Image 1 (cartoon, helix red, strand yellow):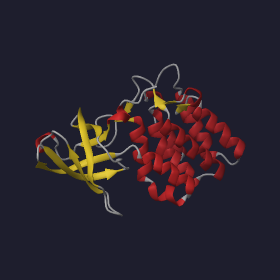
Image 2 (tube, rainbow, N blue to C red):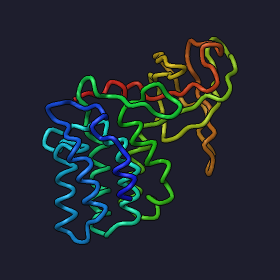
Image 3 (cartoon, one colour):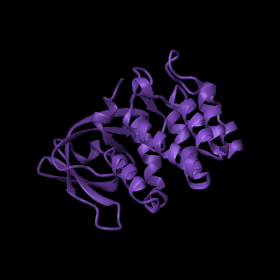
Length: 235
């Protein structure tokens, strides 16, 4: 675990210069991974929550939180129970805090520059089996992550001036009409309206969205959609 933490160049991760402290990110994760009691876990959490990955007093989250999320999940899975509790609390805080202007996005697989909240949620969704196994707290964290949905387009079909987009839905797209960002090949396009046409069946991620006033050629396979409201989150 320490090797994985030390392999990250925390100084190179962008963050508001008045708030983000890379040494707290690296030092806090090291300390939390080695914590063997409540006091040590609390001290590590104080570093991480006081400028390492979030600044709790101002409810700000930094891009470093995205890099730290899989590490915190590993600590929660392998570490001392007090370290697990601290790690889960930090993940919950990072998902709910707001980024500073100019530091709202991170590079993410399949997208141009995902909103921080969506990138954190995607890591949590990847570890759903572990989180469900934790019981109520893990399921609550997953429920919060589900609000930051992500849809990857696989195929599109035209219909009545709109387009039916078939693909993979991670998270939960609520009922109603929503705006979305479409990420593809280094560009972000805003889609003014879409709705969930067919939700995934139990045990599947396959879903269908109806995208209003767009033709299939405007929605290429491989494009990834995020909630537009996540892209608008700012401290």
